[in-house]
Length: 320
Ligand code: FES
Image: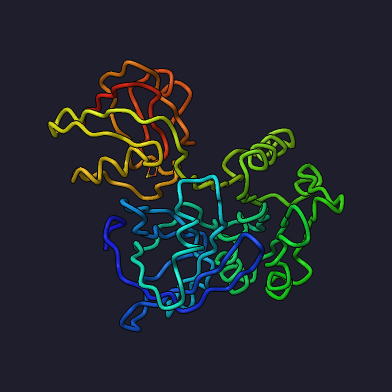
C-alpha cells in the first residue's frame, strides 16, 4: 500500500479529552488488522468537506503492538481551513473515513542510550506510540509535557500511568515553565532529544541544544502543519496543459489533485519534501510555509512545497 492509497475505517469511539482535543479510535470496516507502524508514525485522514476533499496528517497515538485499531488526537482550530472542524462537528461514532497507510518521519533512534521526549499541547500525540515502544525496549527516557492550563492537561493522567515518575508536567498558567537548558544539562553521552509542539518551542529547544554543545543529529523534531489560508490565484500546470484556480481555503496540492494530476506526498504537512514542485514563473511571490526547503532553495524562487505553501500572485506557472 502506497501513502497515496487509502483504506476504509469506522470511527469506533470519540472521546473529548480537553475542551479542544478529541481522540478518535478507528477500526478497519471489515474488522481486519490495520497496517503495522512504528512509534512516531502518522496517517493522512481523508475528509469530504463542503465541496472539497481535505487530507490532513495526524500522528498515531495507539500502540504499535496492537494494530486492531488506530487512535488519533485532533485539536479543533476554528480559524483553520475546516479540516479539524469537520472532524469535531461532522464525524460521529460509526462514521466511515478513509486513511492512508502509516508513514514515520519521527522515529525513535533505538540505538541511543537515552531519550528525552518534549511535547507542547497537541504535540504530545506522536509520543504516545513512542512511549509504547520505549516501555517495551526498557531504555531510560524522560517525558516533558507543557500545557497552557490545567484544563488542557487532559492526557496527563494517562501519561502518568504510562510513564510514571518519568513524566514532568508543566502547567504554564500555574507558573511552571519548561527550562530547556535545565532539561538538557547533565544528560549522558548518547542521549537524543525529540520535540513536537509549537514552532517557538521547537526552535527554543534546538537553540538550547546548540548552546549546550549537542550535535544537531541528536535533536529530532516534528511539526506537521495544516495548510494556511491565503489569497486565491491561478496556477498553470505547464506539462499537463491545465490551468486551475486555487481558492483561499484550498491548498495548492488539493487544487492540483482536484484537477486529476497526481503529486507524490508523505506528510502533507511541509516536512518530508516529497511533494516538491518546480516553479517556472510567477508574477508575484512564493509564500513558503514548509520547513523542508533551505534558505537558498527558497531564495532561488524555483521550488515550492504545494502541500502547505502557495503564492501571493495572479498567476503561478509550475513545471508539472
Ligand atoms: S507532502 Fe511532505 S512536504 Fe509536502
